[in-house]
View 1 (spheres, one colour):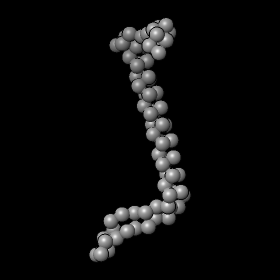
View 2 (cartoon, one colour):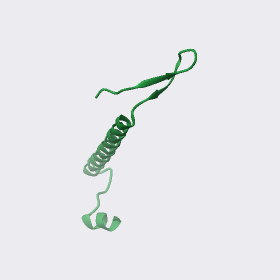
View 3 (cartoon, one colour):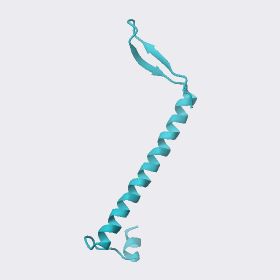
View 4 (spheres, one colour):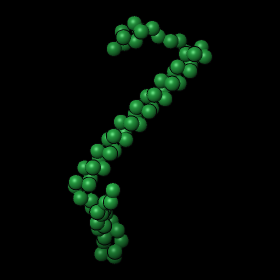
Length: 72
């Protein structure tokens, strides 16, 4: 996607800020939210995978389905 940026400069020509059209900003925000949700899911899967390895190696005790449901 091509963004239509406008740069704001001070009296000496130094770039001080960037403007982006609202429509483009809303698209960027939506993409950020999706990326954050994906990262959270991947982090959760990584944690679950580590827990499974720890249970299989005996470093951690597993839980029964009843115990998991009781935690909800």
